[in-house]
Length: 258
Image (cartoon, rainbow, N blue to C red; front, top):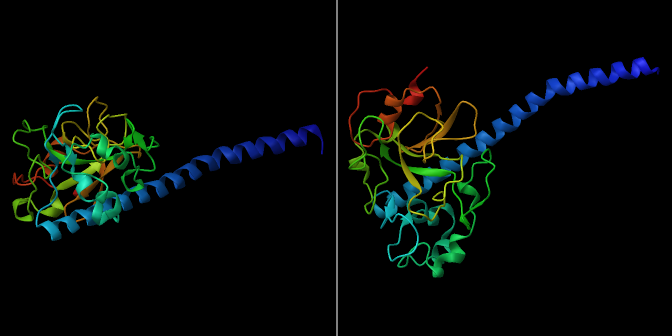
């Protein structure tokens, strides 16, 4: 083989690699996206396990506090569903009578749980030394109006019953990806692991919002256990309606849009 022929072969191989690489990356992302959706479905099943056992969905945050320390417990909805995520032994290690950041809970809180990790996010399994979470509970929306009182399913200090979700479980977002940035409250035990939606999906803001590393949108978990992919281009007003539990908005759901 002459030098010219060798260079031609190398050029052809380089072109083939350049053509195949995006396809390989696309297949990998499709697999990660499926795994992310599967995690949310499991979380949805655990929420309904809590509903069957307690007759209400878990409280969004028990005894919210702005920072760390003090006597307020600040436990998250995601900590209360551990028994239905096959994590009963971990739940038994948590002293729910003490704050989530109390020394007595340090070892349990530092356990990373793969169920709360989106494989596309690529973040550290630990956030501030505690087990991280790429999924946050929806506390409501502040796109149309201030979120006071909270309009979502996960509110402070009280669990919501199915009857109170008059917009319908299939029309209401419970949990969504919040998987970009290093938010200090993105921990599965931390009661600040919830948010109200204020912008469009994947809007670049400094605060917790529906955001992901998936191209074109982010996953959301509805109250009926269905996982929906919500596009970046979704009208924020339509997204806002899906983040409330009983406002009776006439808008279609984001996932019914063309």
